[in-house]
Length: 205
Image (cartoon, rainbow, N blue to C red; front, side, top):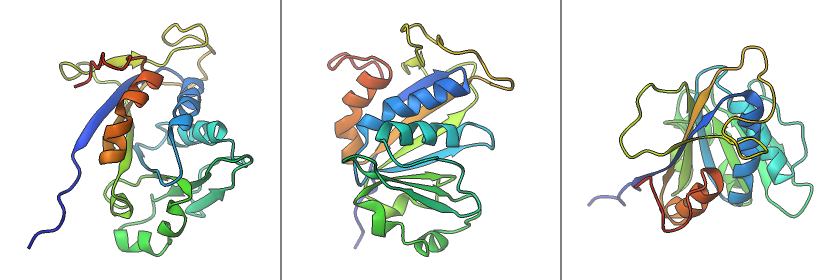
């Protein structure tokens, strides 16, 4: 007798982000699409911009800050300042197994919070039936055929506009992959908000 089939992944967007400032702005744009119960698995090398993205999500959710790296405390809960969900921010860098994740009791807050886990790949996906994988990496010279890649727009709507680059800024590519019915259903909204693909004009499938 076999268990339930694993959810199929759905590629939602691949977005070019030129600066740290634009990474934070991307988090603020993503935040309104999130709701209590959402699990975000955030991956990327050291210095990729993971915490910067989470800081933007926290600002967009209007939670109590500041949102900083929780490396030494592993998890922080940021209560909402308004009527939205709390933000649970986890750093799983020092965790080595799902059993250690279980010890954190993240599922106790999952239903009423947006939970973002840095370095969570392979460790926390079992906490929920649906999750959003967000991977930050350096831009690849060639991307898969049919994948729409859009630079994060500045205030004027021009790709990459708005704000000077900080010293050490490097371009990043943020890839969002949804797992499960929650993100299959929300795919159109994600693409419309983050890369401007209107409903019925899906260029990513």
